Length: 97
Image (tube, rainbow, N blue to C red; front, side):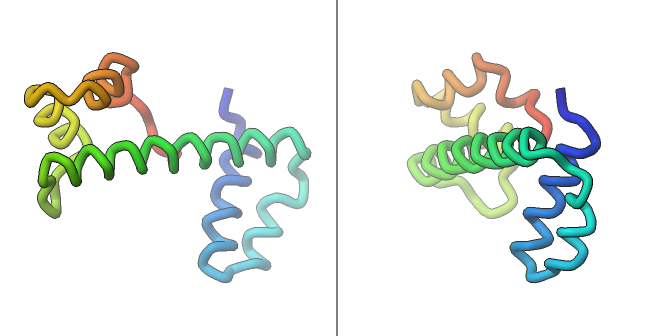
């Protein structure tokens, strides 16, 4: 389950990436190590999926502005097994936090 503290950890990491360290630290000051780890795992999984979608898009000449759903659907229709797997696993229904 994604708790408000885990969401704050994710927001903090994004703030750190933009150099807003004070704002990021303020969000995580009351978070536990387990919550930080859960946030890191979510971000890692998102990065892994994003990389897969990018590779699929490159193989199928995705255009700027194409949605993830359009890229995966077009690739699956063309026989791309990885795209089919992501769709079968419910990737199109995933939420980005």
